[in-house]
Picture (cartoon, rainbow, N blue to C red):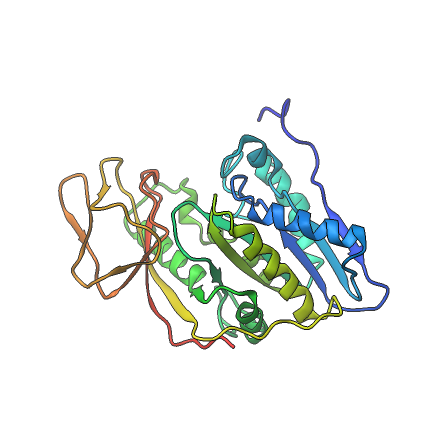
Length: 323
C-alpha cells in the first residue's frame, strides 16, 4: 500500500451542548464523488460557528469528508468501497481499512447516524432504512420505530428496505454456485456499511441518497435533512417540519450478479425503473435472456459491474408503514 501521497488524517467537527441530550453523527463523502453532504455540512458549520444556529443540548459530530483519498481523486473509492465490510481491522491492508479504524469507534460512540450520499443516474432522492424490530441472527434491531420516524421527517418520499436480507441471499447463491472462497462477496459481513455498523453498535441510522451527483438541488436536500434531524432529536431549539405522507416504500428482494464482461443490459436502466413480469432486462454472454420475475423495480443497475459482482437489484412494493 503506497501511502506517500495519501491523506493522513480526517477532519472532524464536534459540538457539545452544555445540557445533556442525544448524540448525532453526520457523514459526508463516504464515497469521494458524492459531495452533496460535504457541501451541506459546510453550510451548517458556518451557521454554528457564525452564531446563527446554536446547539442547545446533546452532542453533534460532523465529518464532511469521510474518505479524503477518494475525495481527493474525485472518485467513488480510494483503494476499495468504504461502505462495504466496515469494521475495525487489526492489520489494515488498504486506505479504507485505516479509515474504518477511526470511523467505527466514532459511530459506536453516538446514538444516531445520518449518512448523506448521491447516485450516478437521474432520479428522485430516497432513504435507505433498516429492518423492523427483530431478534434474528442477521440484523437484530430494537429501534425500528425511531428510525422510521426519522425517515418520515427527512424529506424524500421514496424509502428502500431489505438491504442485508437481500445481500445475504446473494451470498447464499454465490456459495451454491461454487464461487472462489477468496471472493469477498461470499462474506455476508461484506454488506455492512455505516448504518449497518451503527445498528450493530446499538444505535440507529439512515442513509439518505440526496439526488444525482451533479444535481444542484442535492446539497439543499442534504442540508434540510440535517436540520430536520437536529430538530427532531431536540439538539436545536427549533420545531421539526411535519413528517411527509404518501411514501413509496420498496423492499429489495433479490440481487443478480454480472457473470461476464459480455453480460449486457437490454437498455440503459436507471434505479427504480418499472419492470413488468417477463420483461427483458439483459443478456448473458451466451445470449440467454434475463427477464423480470415479477412486477416491480430495478434498483442500483451497474452496467460497469465487475464479473462476479452485483449487477442489479430487484424490488417490489412493501407493506411497511413510515410515520
